Image (cartoon, rainbow, N blue to C red; front, side, top):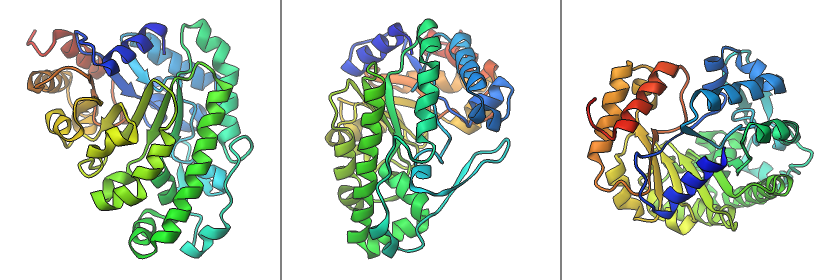
Length: 346
């Protein structure tokens, strides 16, 4: 992320009026490798191809804030790998992390991983360290410490259904698991901050909070997210593109000031839920419009979104979730054209 982009992001989060509305997208392995013309496995295993793909994206669309920017990751296997899960990497499909815990009884013996040495995390960090001089030469800096959230990781360790059942049937063991994961995540976030002093943001991704109600979130979500966002950084960014209605009212208590949601809720409805202090990043349909639609479909959707906004402060235009596979350069340019027009028909 360039200095100008970081400054723009800070201005929006502070509530300053910005015109035209800024555009940002979360980009990672589901979209970037195939857009660049390589396989996902090549993106994961070649530092040069990973760097070149990210550099091509930021150069092709300099007006877009790509978050978190030069994201070093191995898909959903990134953090679970530190716990010892079996990771499967097909050549050009998304990697899979297979569950590790056979029952809740295994939680007591689950060690807290060391992010300096365990799983894929040393490779994540070393890739960034090796790339940092070239990133900075291109005008970009590492701004975010990034991790999947505690419920997301727990679901990978146990299986989603098993984890949700454990919440209801064995709450004490569930909290023990989340406590261990949160301890690990704090160590992981702090290690990233120590390695890269330019970091001034925390970015967590957790869709599992969209599968539980408000009472469950108060017990199994809120306390852990408050700990994970309890850092003196300027941007506290949460992604949850599942149903966010149960957890969204708690975003200010969590410390979140930037939120990327799923597309099945309007920004106006979400603003009523979260209040005025949280910047909202969305919210056109990612698959059916941004990826599968025509350029005119994209323009129409962005224009309708802008015209629908009751309040344009603390809004960043994006899709509802991360950039999906198959989004073309033409459709991204159509998105930017509509954003520049401010909702007017050209």
